[in-house]
Image 1 (cartoon, helix red, strand yellow):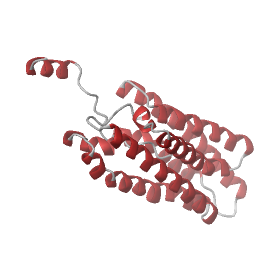
Image 2 (cartoon, helix red, strand yellow):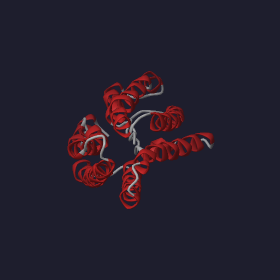
Image 3 (cartoon, helix red, strand yellow):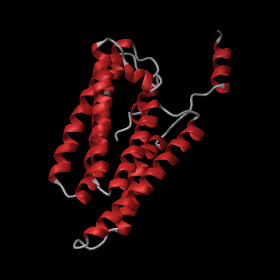
Length: 222
């Protein structure tokens, strides 16, 4: 194929750019939950009002998660398997929260997601399979097989760490403090971890032009 043909093909079938919209898809539903919960949050002495605020927030969370999935489909032309699974768990645990009127199910949901992804990625790595490459649909051009295996292993270990951290914070913090920890602890940790992977990815063939995509296409972080 000539240079002209390559340029023509690139113009005809450009690689879809997710930009920071992927981050909005991942964290938008959580922000919706926080907003609705704070809006309906009652005085500290009202136990029933607290449960009602959680239920209203959970309903909004579920709707926002499904909306984010639909937005991803129409904006990017596809929905990643990880986002589908994450949304399914949000709806499932959210339904349990509403049915049983117990916020524990919303708090346990991230642990379940982190454990599931962690076990799958580590299990695949032990079998010599880079499952993250399948889940991210080969988002990082030029990355070789060894790079994908290391990335899968590293994210698997990180997910297991996050599962443990979520359980510690869930047991130690109030529900509202745990919600803010999701925003100010889990999200920064995810970004920091993602940045630490860039040198390894570059070493294993990631194209310099794709470096920013490492941040944009990070796995969902529950």
